[in-house]
Length: 259
Image 1: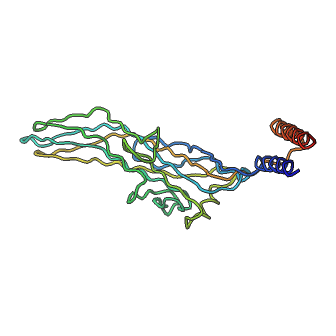
Image 2: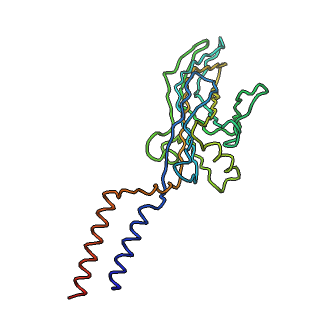
Image 3: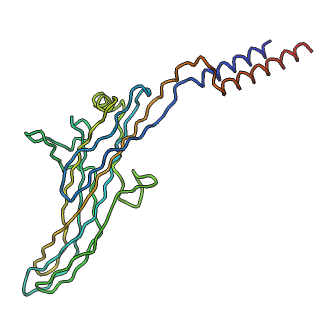
């Protein structure tokens, strides 16, 4: 009889375990921003629907891409110049209440204004070399760069990597963040870019300009404990198989006891 009780108990535990809550993730993609630099704009993604379960953490992943062309001119009339030039793209992203990355700000008119003191991303292109005679000019080819899109995009090489920040119950602003990202509508992030030209020059007087197009993309990964499914009055096929197997086992145990 002890063996029978153990079999029944094991079957009951299996049935209960099948209905317990489980850890799950959900990824939502924000609408992207793309324009000639510099620009600011909003990106939207679906909120976490609380009917799915209990939200445990939120990871925000920000990536970017750029294409740039440099025009380099030696403005002196009597001295050659040489050196290298490159484009720098800084990207900031924040939310409307400024509870996330705290790199944004708002003007008196309520418009988003980026703060580039601590950008989420700081991308540096490869260098374009030049050797110019007095009054000479040259144009680099199209230079492109983007953050990693495959593998572990948050770390490793080759650089640059995406900006990946996770918020959970240990974050001091978790209450405000989880409330903002939970609901049945959309959540908004605001992004901005700042481009600069970095020049290392020898001789002459060199002027460098850049024409750059950039894109900002972002995703949010919700880690949550899924709510257990509601009880069903009609057993599922898997449940029927488990019940049948348990009944067969119980029958064999009874037969063994009688013999």
